[in-house]
Each structure stands twice: as structure tokens, then as C-alpha cells.
Amino acid sequence: MNSPFFKKRRVLPIEHYGSEVLRTTSEPVGQITGQIRDFAEQMIEAMFKNNGIGLAAPQVGRNIRLITLMTHTEDEELSPTALPGERLLAPQMPLALVNPEIVSASKQVSSFCEGCLSIPELNGDVIRPVSIVLRAQLLNGQMIETACGGLLARCLQHEIDHLNGVLFVDHLSPADKAEVLDQLEAIERRTLKSRKNRG
Image (cartoon, rainbow, N blue to C red):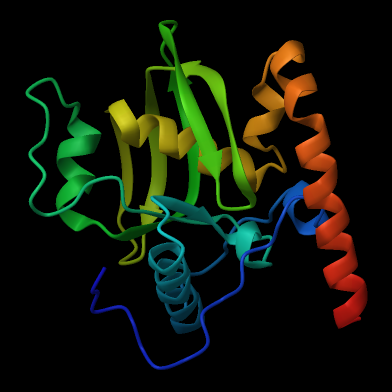
């Protein structure tokens, strides 16, 4: 995907399952500085490079409460039932959200097959609320609080989980988790071996 965000610099590497940073609760961003904006831009580059639709700062090695999203493209029409948050944020994508939090969630839930850049080649069905109320800050400092549904709501829940040290596999049923346990352990062994070799 071509993007104005791409520059000639090293793309941030993705942290994989087994990395301690993925299990650490992230700290709030105090002030939106030029460094934070630059890091958000680098996160968007990494998200594009890895064909992701969402990325959280811990996935690129920093435990700060910052996520990036690309759940809608310019030529993709919104559903007629799209909630206000989707209508607000879709035209701004790709975008970064600072200190995102879920204010409330619907009682209605749905199951969807999720994957994660930090757990490559592994997918699983995760049950989540179909809509949420998001509170966050945009990089321009604007505070938003808005209802989100559809893929955006699911992606937000997935990425905000990352900020709390939670991975999508933690939501799998015991039976589904058992089925992928060998794969998870293999990914963890590779991660620890890679870290040791770098060390």
C-alpha cells in the first residue's frame, strides 16, 4: 500500500508472543509531543508494512498508551448503520489514538476470527461486544468520546487489550486455546531464541 507516511528509514520491528513488553501494562501518554507524533507515524509505517489494520505501541516495543488504526480505506463505503464513531474516524484513517479507553460496551456480543501481528499465522474465534463507547485523544489534541461499531469496535478492543497486556488468545475458549497451545509455545521459543541471539 502506498502511503504518505512512508519515509526512508528502518521500519519498527514487531514484537512477538513471548516478549515481556506484550504482557506489561502500558503507561498513559502525558503530553502529545513531536516525538509522540513521530512515533505514531512510525507505527503506521509498521502497520502498513505488515499488512495490519491496527497496531498498539507495545507491539513495537514501547509500553505507552498509543494505538494506530486502518480499518477503513478511502474508497470503502460505510455501512448505512455505521455509528457516529465510524463516521468520525473513518475519513481520518490511517490515524493514531492517544490514551484510548472503553467507556462502555454493548451487552450484545458476536464472535469473529481474529489474528494478531504479534502472533503470526495463528487465528481464533473471539467473542466481544458488538459496539463500544470510545474515549481518546487525537494527535491534534482533540478529545473525543463516541460510539463505535463494526470492525472498528472490534479492532479498538483488540488494540486496547494490548495496552493492558492482554492478547487475543487470552479470550479463546479452553478448547480452542488447547488446540493452539503447541503453536504458541513454538512462537515463544522462537522469540526467546531471537532475543538471546540479539542479546
